[in-house]
Length: 196
Ligand SMILES: CC(=O)SCCNC(=O)CCNC(=O)[C@H](O)C(C)(C)COP(=O)(O)OP(=O)(O)OC[C@H]1O[C@@H](n2cnc3c(N)ncnc32)[C@H](O)[C@@H]1OP(=O)(O)O
Image (tube, rainbow, N blue to C red):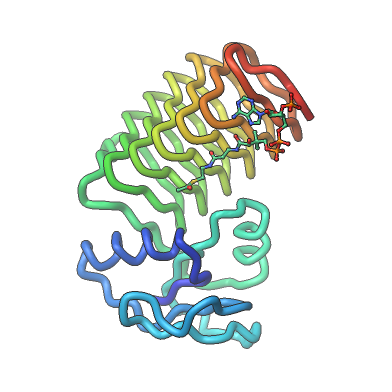
């Protein structure tokens, strides 16, 4: 297994992989901030081709950059699920998606590829998360919520049941979303209002 990205987010993913007794051989980073993380060497990512059989997780928090890397490098992307998260056997999570400690994903939720379900996040029944979504720590989606590609739900935000959130949306920390949100906007506050 390799990681792509050596940020703080990578530390959390390494911790999850270690807890699952998965060996990480190396970490690639286009601009390595360190030479090793928890004993795993960090190497310069010069864009060289890797075997398509290489198992990998993209440990990059920025949704658009994660998408760019996934689309430019065809590897065997793996999920990373913390053993103390709760993922229903009736939910689905896509390749490359990471699920942090204490997160809950309830039945019939569909979580796409390369998503981040961060620490303590709650994804209720029947939610649909498209690819490259990030649900930040302690954010909660009530039942039947839809979140479009590359959108981020900020730390501690809540989304009421049945709401549809568009693509490339940023929901600010602590926001309360009570109405559908169109594509490419930033929403903050309670009730959530569009500021950009
Ligand atoms: C493990 C991890 O760390 S995961 C990462 C978790 N991090 C997050 O969830 C961060 C979420 N990001 C935010 O909440 C950000 O503040 C954003 C994206 C909503 C806005 O950021 P920016 O685009 O830089 O906007 P900026 O800081 O200039 O604020 C614009 C206005 O919105 C207000 N504002 C910003 N964030 C919020 C918020 N969360 N709630 C209410 N108001 C807010 C500001 O006070 C400012 O108001 P003003 O124009 O009246 O002065």
